Amino acid sequence: MNSENFRKIEPYVPGEQPQDRDRVKLNTNENPYPPSPYVLRAAKEMNASALNLYPDPEARELVQSIADYHGVGFDNVFAGVGSDDVIAMCFMAFFNSEKPILFPDITYAFYDVWAELFKISYEKIPLDKNFTIVKEDYFRENGGIVFPNPNAPTGICMGLDDIRAIIEHNRDTAVIVDEAYIDFGGESAADMINEYDNLIVTRTFSKSRSMAGMRIGYAIADKALIAQLKTIKNSYNSYTLSTAAIKLGSAAIKDEEYFIETVAKIVKTRENTAQRLKKLGFSMTDSKSNFLFVTHEKMRAAEIFERLKEKRIYVRYFNKPRIDNYLRITIGTDAETDALIAALTEILEGAK
Ligand code: PMP
Image (tube, rainbow, N blue to C red):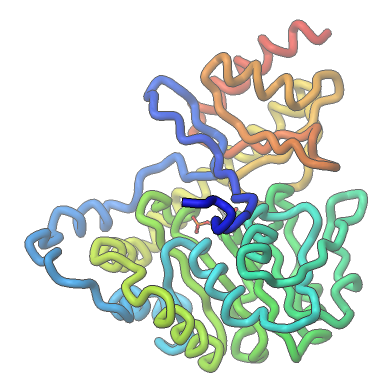
């Protein structure tokens, strides 16, 4: 066929998923710990012979478990195939103005891809020199706002007062707060959905719930917004969540103890890794996520990235303006941190 009819778009490039076992994988912000034992049990009990049937298009079991966890109504929750799916649906559902939507210049790289795909005009608002979101920059006419909190890949968290100010100044347009990493140290805006009918908070099971492989994400918002999201979903793909995702996700969110324990371990390793990296000459932002965003005083990030890869240690490097001398390093287990520090010590020996 004539490729002139192909849709032209620059896609998002996800981090590598190397298939070899003998490697340290710190490049896509997964959780290094397995899912809760509740999930493992639910997986064993799953009735595979019922897979001839479509899943519940409303994913009721999962949506109700999420609603119970947050203390909100069933009608305040929308679930999807990872928060990528949920945020993409939000773009389709709420960003339908001639005015540009706003998001930071340094942020989750999927936002501009969705804006391009759905032909939504957008404007990137520069972070300040410390990589901080300046709330006043969002006090202006727009077609909607989206930003992660904590931001990615900087890990920097915004306080709830600043988020409230952004929502207050934009009561006529949708404000999406992408809380993919909120459980690692930030304060959630989720409770504010009762006050603001223009706020959507999105979450994922991929990070703090150790379930990136199951692809579960959700939005919490006012009922009218959730109804609109369902309208969009049912105009595109009714059965987004698989039977397995519904069952296992619902089991995962019920295990509060395991969740608290694994998140605490990651936060502790993060602080410990930060101290060890500082001793090696790295500086970094104050990350409240499950990753660190670091730069070295002597060696370029691109070189460190390549040298680590030779040692089968995978981290993330973005060859983009303002951040091309930074690495984003996911927090792994303590043993993975030891391997990282040993490799960096060796690599940096040569830079002295
Ligand atoms: N938002 C941000 C800021 C992210 O970094 C990610 C992970 N790539 C996502 C959303 C999407 O995560 P998932 O689709 O796994 O829920």
